[in-house]
Length: 138
Image (cartoon, rainbow, N blue to C red):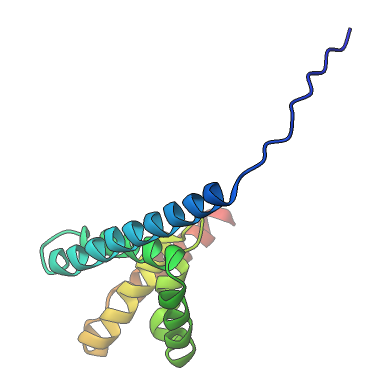
């Protein structure tokens, strides 16, 4: 026995559409403001020990970029102008971010910028770990 209930179509008036559009704009402005607060807080917390500044900044950027057309447009322009600078950030803004590869890449970059060649250890550690894992497989 199948029982189907038919519901009358819901009709929205012009006032309902206006209210929905107004609420959408207000919510976008509020989310952009929260995102900007998170970005500023992330920059302020970044010098402190611990990685708390990066997640706050990335979360704030996600809110801003998803809710502001102008910010998204500027982000794309900046991305085209400086692709190497924003590539790690773009990888962290994906739906399933690749946190560990991005963190490792940034460690290698910072090591390359800060330390002389003979003091760099991260690359050597990675290579020795690769050799050890290859020996264990064989």
